[in-house]
Length: 421
Image (tube, rainbow, N blue to C red; front, side):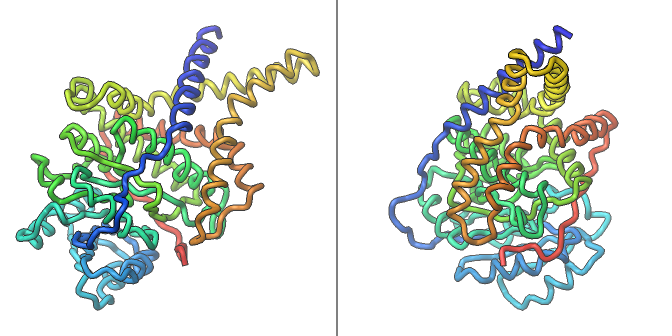
């Protein structure tokens, strides 16, 4: 038992140090103070596999932007539903449909993105690659109304090569449940704080949704931008950072997406992400020996890469927590029992509540979707620590798949009628 307490103490200390650092990270202002002329061309890439529930709303929302310098590439991965039929019904020259067929299909998101990339290189071979912005959206992604204006101002700095948008869950309350609310707190506030901290370490991570990158930056890579890694977005991030590219994060540029309401689908999604993180371990040596990354940048990236192992060990904290609370209750109303329960409350509940308070304050400014009631949000905050342990089955699944050499890409299905409208 003493070794368990020691491990728990170490993990709790690491957890609190990290939480403290990201909570106090302030936004770095990166937009130009002046409006710039709209000379950028946005090439939006949407990989699709059985997305007939959401693709119509996503394409319609993009066409509502009063943006002439936009092209949309929809890559269908040999869908068995009505995805192709729905996309084909759009009579707009901005939309380009690329249809993949087996055996050259269903090889993962990275493969679809690279197919689109090769077509973009052909279609824009005569254009200035510095001014072509490759924008990756999921089929359920909705950009905020000011998205391209914000991106224009940020990319007015020639030294900025990529932007990651802030993620917001659409069905955090309406058409959702407690699980989707917890994902909204996680993405919008916790990951948002992580990205603000990464602005300081210059290691901002690109996500799979709401990713903006100059075509010229992607062309510098010696190989195709995306690999068959299950975490293709962070795999690309690592290679861009090692290539000394400047990636930034914007709090104002928001991408809305669905949250998962099914725990089974949630486990599948997270196991894919965790296994993808394990696959990225092949870059650890390059990260540690890099001469372009700062020391703090290397530490941040390595900390992220070892998260699967830390999360696995974090289950020990839960076991110890339950044991300590159990002993405290058995002891009765003693000073020691009150002290133990108080400490465990601070360790397990306070961080989630503190992030939730910030979350409630932040989402008041957003009117596009119905925000969660305060009481429900605070309940979610109290459960944020337990939410970490919701991922334990996905961790075990990811490790087992990795050990067995199962690297097939599997996507989670969408819910119907979930949008910002």
